[in-house]
Image 1 (cartoon, rainbow, N blue to C red):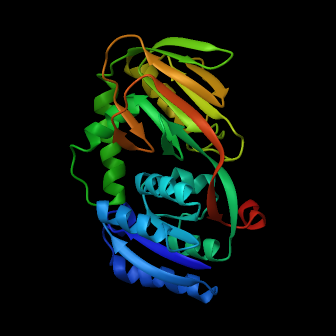
Image 2: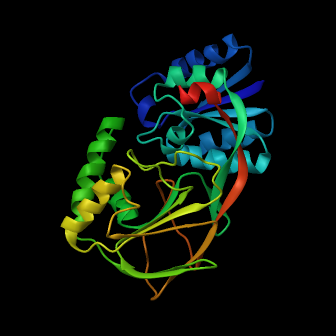
Length: 301
């Protein structure tokens, strides 16, 4: 298979490593499996430009980066109709978890090099594609606070996230929202909403166990005060948000989100701060993305 390997040198795992050397090591794993591989190492916008170019020239693009980079790559791959392989080099790597890709980058490369192309769902909001989750309110506010802090590694980013959460949860702002599909309408005053590409699995970090269910997972918290918010956040981190008494939950292939007042609600798309104009039209795009993933038998092992 003709593969383009693109590494974002700003990804947390690469910040303290020689990215070019890592790129050649990863490429060697694919070449040993019989693939024709070219390597590109870039940062920020240059990495995205490299992904766009590679999508026109390759059968598959393998991208190393965090969830934001992977999200951008997924949108490009979906539009181009090429397969996307994910090297989990970020902090949380939720999409990689959903695809059962090993967390170690060399093990991930080996799994992808011997893997298979399959089709998974992707989601969109007002026409913008995402692979993991759209978040409103609390989580985006935490991301904005974290970006004010300095960190130089993956561990530093995780510590920064914890500090940012403690600051934000003590001064959270609630907003009035309605979320409506063909059968149901949820109206709440809330500090946070999360809509995921397929429902989050149970008993682990918030990522989907499967990406072919054809529905969104909608989570709206009614928690008030920092103690309740901390408890709901802990439940979400442990894969128990769906049953929490302070969370309204809905599964749906599409939903419309409206804000009752003219408010600015912090928003993230796959962990990246974005600006979106309401109302928000969110929908699942069933089978909208081809991925290079570990073989099903290996993923289940």
